[in-house]
Length: 373
Image (cartoon, rainbow, N blue to C red; front, side, top):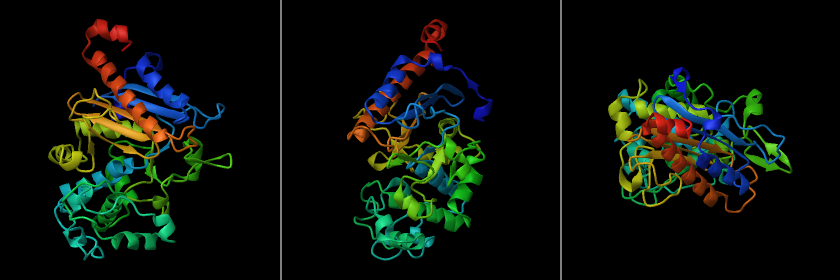
């Protein structure tokens, strides 16, 4: 468990390139605060907070082990995907079965051709998004709206990233497990991996630790999920709604690097394998043609995911390295280019992490001493 692992770097040893990358994001108005965690399968190399939780310099400073962030689409790969794979490993869920086997309402108009695996690889043919918060008034109506949505292209023919895939997968998990998604994920994923702060619908008492996700007439919005579709679905959804800390996301990344009892290694490796359209089973594989999000210095085997609120995790199994960047980009950004600039920050953070780890892990005693490792 991460709590038993060695934290080898103090804040003063953090590489200057990393500091510059994150501080540039703050200076450019992309986000008011962030945490970065860099590590290997059995070590944390860097764990540092930057800026403040709001643009008010009197607000709290982010803490890698304490601040709770709206993880947005990291929910897909930290809760929904592992829950489905756990059920598949136990023989309770067939990834190649039609979704309709588990959700009988999802039938007709090519829906019968959508396999569970298509939900993981985003090959269902479903559209990327539905405005459930404006089209429906209740969680039940929102669910019915998604189940009634037909594919717009032949299932399996192409990749289109879609929130609907993760919503459906979450309901498949619930149908097979017989318990809500948040209950299953807590019991089978978060607790075994000692992710003690990762949860859906955090209690009101935890709001003092949460990064705001918006601003209403000068008042920070804390404790509300930024994703309005997840809110319409009651706060627990397959595509969004999860909260967690930087160190908890690090614990999860370490599981994917070193393995563990949560999943058989064969299935864990299958999920990490590049498939159509740079997708694994839930994971996004690094696009080596661009610096967006994952930079240029992580290996082509790198996989990860990003979240709309400003979150990301990248994991490089070849170099035994990961980098976590959590921000609240959605809190009153001071630029109209916050997504574009955030991608640049993510890439610069990843490159700084890769360069620093290369020196610290393979540079020899003299190189490590010079770098402050």
